[in-house]
Image (tube, rainbow over the protein chains, first blue to last red):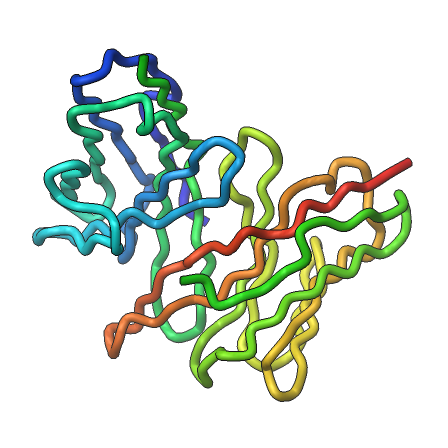
Amino acid sequence: SAVISQKPSRDICQRGTSLTIQCQVDSQVTMMFWYRQQPGQSLTLIATANQGSEATYESGFVIDKFPISRPNLTFSTLTVSNMSPEDSSIYLCSVGRGGRSGYGYTFGSGTRLTVV
Amino acid sequence: DAKTTQPTSMDCAEGRAANLPCNHSTISGNEYVYWYRQIHSQGPQYIIHGLKNNETNEMASLIITEDRKSSTLILPHATLRDTAVYYCIVRVEDGSSNTGKLIFGQGTTLQVKP
């Protein structure tokens, strides 16, 4: 399975600022996803990062708040913009190779964000 | 929205089999069932997945009913390290592009007790 390096692993940020999280994969992957996990909650899918085109956002998430880039098949970034304390969460990158045979998806260890 | 329903929590005695149920009554014919677990403060870990047939690997077994409306994850000999939140997920397919996304439900918190 793919190995994911996610940076930073944690950060404490001031409200009103922005943080960019990086996701680097050790091999080319078809699919890359960004999730948010609020304290004590399950994972919520933010968006699918599409290589060379705009990300596909889930209901309740918008590009202005969570801009995503994916310049190639091994790298993506998620920016959390104009942060407020409600954005304090763990943000996780996930990758998959796709296909009808149902390949497994791998998750990074996450970025723990605290907004003060 | 998640397409699965799981019990909120379960207990299991160490060394015994842990059987975690999942209902996915609205599953479509080409949608896979995935199981992941999350140990505190870590990213979700892949356990197993299946489409129609029962599956087994070194971690667990997945039993899918014939009508595919439910499944059971079996940890044959639970240890204290298996204490985690277990997520049953139906992969949502993305049209004809042979890709799909995982939409997580609330999961089952499994507590393995000595």
